[in-house]
Image: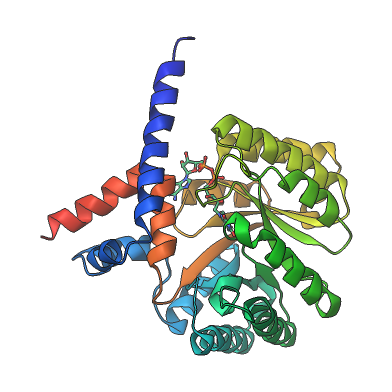
Length: 325
Ligand code: FDA
């Protein structure tokens, strides 16, 4: 073993253990109740989300735009099995899009939508309902002068989400989607979607996935990310590099030059509250950078994924909770 390699492996293994533990726990109602009612949890939530109301979302959007960032807003919520709730979520997107337009913020703010939040998981009619709800959101986005990007969830939904994307793009060709480099299939999906007008957000992937469908090691996931970047940059679409990883960001900067991409033909994206230093550095270097801003009351699943990505966030969270007991 080379000098230094041991500690990197240990820290990565530790991270994976926390990640597995957290993602495994996330589904339990008892754990959810304990976390959501813990004193001090609000402080942690506001580190990663703009707040619970439309006003909070608009305020964060305006502040970010004043600094020079573009924004994508995510109305928090996922996995609903209730048709009414799915329609309410779609309504919340329509409402915020109209308020963004009224405030003059829409041209630089798109919205990110999880299809499971607008009905995809409903038995039988789910896929159709989610696509219809997403169509209503796309219509509102077009009226406001902006676009929609479909978030990608666990691998059992990838085909359904890409089928919805194809349906939405017939009327709204600028609808974007997320692809996850940890999935074996993603390089081929990038090839299929690297066409003119196609907006693809490339990320590593945030769900716990089995070996049969996903790369498990950091090195394999990163190598896949680089292969996917090359496919997207060689194509005619608009790639959106969603990562906080220094190494991948440097590679992206070098590849965009190698592929002769102008600054308005791709963008970087990062999560609200994560690596603000790097967000500002990229902005200063003349790159377009969009911040993914979640808001709303259903923050639990989102927060658990952010904690699972980084043990330091977990200790921050636990410390804040314990300090208030
Ligand atoms: P990695 O996890 O290796 O992190 C690199 C470095 O960034 C870390 O060492 C740390 O310094 C910092 N960092 C990363 N995450 C952090 C955190 N939570 N808190 C503090 N520091 C952190 N996933 C998905 O499955 N479906 C989706 O639709 C999306 N959508 C999406 C949109 C956008 C705009 C982004 C940026 C990300 C997503 N993701 C996602 C999440 C994505 O898959 C991934 O889990 C995270 O971005 C973390 O991966 P990185 O590429 O940042 O690398």
